[in-house]
Length: 548
Image (cartoon, rainbow, N blue to C red; front, side, top):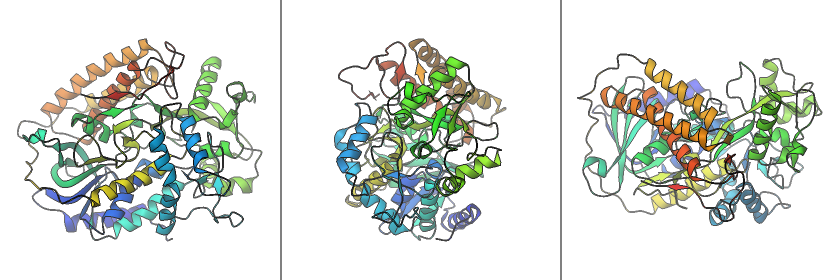
């Protein structure tokens, strides 16, 4: 497959927009997809032969979190693996809160999802000695080798492949540099039905707000990792879909379960660089600065324990020893092995003066994945008619209290296909005239420093008070600060023209409120939620579902 340069993708998209953009700032599609990660691109490709598709992305087509995924995609692909084994591994990692029916549904559709990606041309790493011809690796929490990957840059390879198909489809209009402001629901425009009719979106290049009407609207907007000071997520991960859906009346579930990836590269010049779980899967061990291995003291599975256990163990050792970081050592492997299996990690570390073939990698935990989100069913349908949620922005019931490594991209693929089948099976919906965005009562902001200050404050106190280990007192402090921020932001939003920074801050604060409210309501420690006030697990756990 020919490699696509980002500037080429952007150029194609700009031409696409110029050709298809409507001057009266009102667009209309059969299906509108908000988000250009794996879920969004998959749906666009599968729907475009049947419908007129609009695809909104906040920055460029390849700027979503999916492209950051290093490890791969979990699926049962070999003869020595079974569906039941993958299901059990998922349920174990989920610590009693996975929906078993949903888990089975996703796992059973895993192989067909991978076959579809192979048919699209995704260049997964080959292995001529394996029965299926592809190399499978193993990650923490998995009992088998079942992770198909493209070296250590799987997400990027998948995104490039699918983006090339989206760009050249005549039925897909791509709107880069557009951030959604709010969903247009029946109740917001004076109608009685609980239905979504589209979205208002800000063009961040010219600060104009456009109205987009659609028979179906898909939220594929990713998670809310940027609510924390340290995260492996891209800058676009501001929980936009979750916040918009909540404001529109959707329920959200399990927002207290924020997965902290155990191993983010600790270096002043390495922003949000993830050290893949597969490094531990291939024998990497975690050590203290003096070279002492510590994971066997915390769990019999040691470095291959699920992420929540490894992250808490690192957090414990760092706080106990007053450490800035711990170290991940894979130096027992040869240079040839490391360059073949982890070329991106090897090159990135070497560029920072860290030769991973000779020395350990400094690492710290960082916010990585939002296990909760918008409540959605097996067809990805939400509580609002014609509104779907797919991928990290959704709470499907798959991940429970902790996501099993490499199940995230699988979830995107399976539920994207389920949503497509539901949409194509429906009759044509009514198209109504939508009011344009009203800016008649707002002015330009006199200063932006308020937004920058509030953004920094939010991320700092969420890290300090709502992190890996929690207490009621910390959570209540965070809740109080969130209320003060919400009052300021709502006043700002009401009186001034919207900007991308304001919209993202507004959404992040809404996500923070949902996370804290969910955490306060769980009186136990389970999976990713560990409370010093409630250190024991309850016997009959239930998901945390918030509703209006």
